[in-house]
View 1: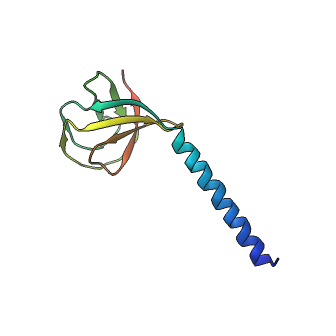
View 2: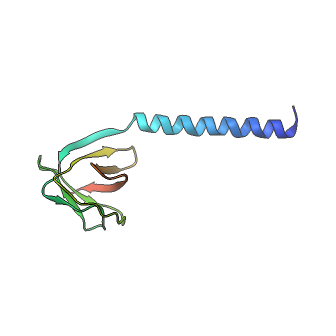
View 3: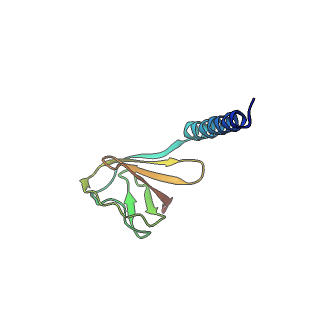
Length: 102
């Protein structure tokens, strides 16, 4: 086996290992809260942005990420990804890190 073949084999093995790790992380994602958000949703803004569910849960954005999107009472969920909580809102192609307020 040539040096080039060995390097390719090592690279392929590393990619498989990374893919398996990512797949394992996705399997461990747990939905912490889900339902409709109260009132008008205007996307993600800054660490002052608060998302409140009709069930009473309140979550504050924990990172600066600006992504405007308007929806009235969209379905959303908070997911524990093993390293923190992410809010996913219907109609958004992105998630944002959040922390529980109450």
